Each structure stands twice: as structure tokens, then as C-alpha cells.
Length: 58
Image 1 (cartoon, rainbow, N blue to C red):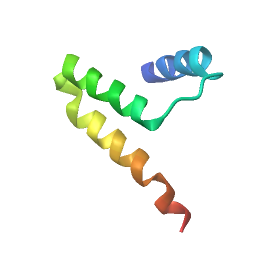
Image 2 (cartoon, one colour):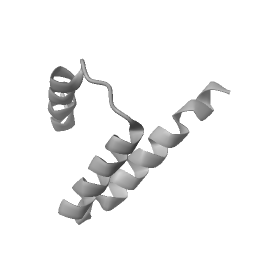
Image 3 (cartoon, rainbow, N blue to C red):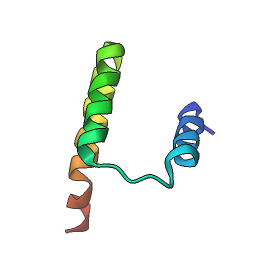
Image 4 (cartoon, rainbow, N blue to C red):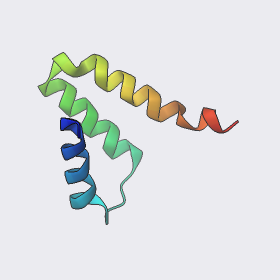
């Protein structure tokens, strides 16, 4: 198990019953990068991947 899996599992356990807007997620990602600028590239890549995820369905 990758270390990130624990974080993903915690996120899923704590937030699985919630629904939220993509604008909320975008705001949280910006706040994270503000606090941890060293992860800016990873967050950028993740956001781009999320934005384009449905392109594989075509």
C-alpha cells in the first residue's frame, strides 16, 4: 500500500456521505498549494487529470 492510499482511504471514510461543488474542491486545492508550494506541480497535474478524465470515454 502506498502512503497516499492511507490519505485517500481517510478522505473516503470521512467524506463519503458528503456532496460538494467542484468550486469547493478547487478552493481547497488552492489553499493547499498556498500552504505547501512545493506540491504546486503535483496539484496542477492532478487538477488537469481530473478536468480531462472524461476524454478517455470518447
